[in-house]
Image 1 (cartoon, helix red, strand yellow):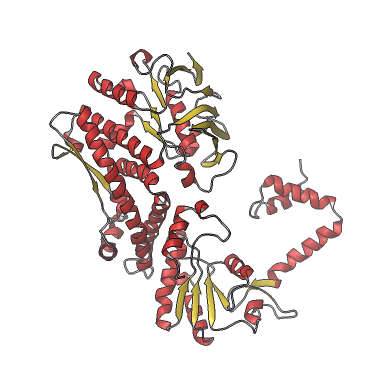
Image 2 (cartoon, chains in turn green, blue):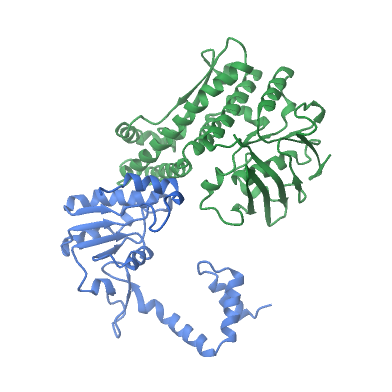
Length: 363
Length: 206
C-alpha cells in the first residue's frame, strides 16, 4: 500500500511558530527541543493542514499568533506519483481550505483527503476519559468508511438541538415535535449504523494489537454501545416518551450522541479498573487499529503524528511503541524532549530537527 | 480620508450582501465619477422602491403596486394574475429566492405560496409563525388539488416539509416533495455521496 507523505510544511503566524518552512523525509522525522518551544504547535500545524481541524482545540481562533489577523499553513502532499498542494488560511474562527489553489467542494471532503493519525499524551482519555473521546474515534474512522457520516452527524445534531429548543420553549406538546423527532430518527439511525461499522472494523484489530503489547491473560474486548433504539418505530416512541425528562434535564437522553465504545479487560470495564500502564496499552492498540482501518478504507498509509512520546511510557511500553513504529510503513512526525531515547529509523530513513523559540531547523 | 457624506453612503452600502467596506467606497467613488444623472436616477428609484414593490397579498411573491393605487392597497403579483396558470397546482417554497429559482426553469404550470420562513425553534420560528391558516384558506378557496412542497433539503427545510404534510393531509389534496439528486449534464463520479445516495433512494422506474 502506498504511503501518504507530507513533503514540505510551511506556516505563517501559526501559534508561536516563526514562519516555519521545512522539507520533511518520507519516513521518520524527529523534532526535538525543550518544552514550550513549539514542538506540539508544529504537529498541530500538520494536522490542521491535513484535516482543517485541530486536535487540541475546537476554537480555531486560538491558532493564530498573538495579535495576528490572519494565519495559515501550507504543504505539499505526495501520494504515489501524485502531488498536491494543500493550504488552510485562518482568519479568526474562519478557515479557508484549498487544494491546488482551488476551494474543495466541502470541508467534509477536505477532511478525508489526506489521512493523518495523531497520538498525544492527553489521548489516554480515549481509555480513561468520558465517552466523547471514543465517539470521536468512531467518527474519525467512520468518515473514511462512509463519506456521508460527517454530513449525517451535522444534520443529526441540528435536529436534536431544534427539538430540544422546541421542547424548552413550547413544552412537551409543541406541534412540531413529531417533525424534529422524525429527523432525529432518520439521521440518528444512519449515524448509528456507520458507528457500528466503525466499531466492528476497529474492535478485532485493537483486540489483537492489545494481545501483543498488553498484560498476558487479560484480553481486551471492544464493543459498540449504541444509544439509539434499533428501529425507526421504537426510536420514535423512545423520543416521545422521553420528552418530559429531556425538557427537565435540558438535554436529549436518547440517541447516538450518547454512544460509547465499550472497553473491557478480562471482563471488567477498563475505565476505573485498569492500571495506568494498561490504559496506555489500550490507547496504543486503539490507535494502531485506527491506522489500519483508515489505511484499508482509504487505500493509503496515513501519516503518523506522535507528540511527546517518550515522556510517560515505561521502558517495556516504549519498546512496544518503537516496535509498532518500526512496523509502520508510512511517514512519521514525532516530537520529543530527549532525542537520544528515540531509537527508530536508520541514518537514511531518519531526519532530525531542532525546535527552539518557535523556529525549526534541521540538525 | 473620505468626506463624511461619502463615508455615510459607503456605510449604508456595506449592509448589502457581499459588499465590504472597500467595495462600498469603490461604488460611491465610481458613482461620483459618473454623469450626475446616474446618481439622481438611482436615488429616485431607490426612494420609490419600498412603496412600489412588496409581497403579493395572495402568494408572497414580489409584486408591483398598481399605479395610482391607494397606499396599503393589496398587491397581486404577475404569477397570480396570469390566467394561463393552473389554479389547481400550488408550489410551496420557503423564500422568494426559491420561487425565482423554480420560475427560471419555466416548467412550473401552477402558482406559488411563499412561507417566508422555515421552522426553526433555534431561530425562534415555531408552527404558529408560519402562515398555515392562509395557505389552507387558499387551498380551499382556489380548488387546489395538488401541492408540491419545495422547501430546501436542509434539516429545517425537511422539518417544515414534514410539518406541512401533517397539516395539509386532512385537506385531501395530492402532496409531493421535490426530488433531490444528481445535477444534469454532470458526471456521476463527481456527485457528493449524500446527493448520490438520495438520487439512488429516490430512483424512478424506467
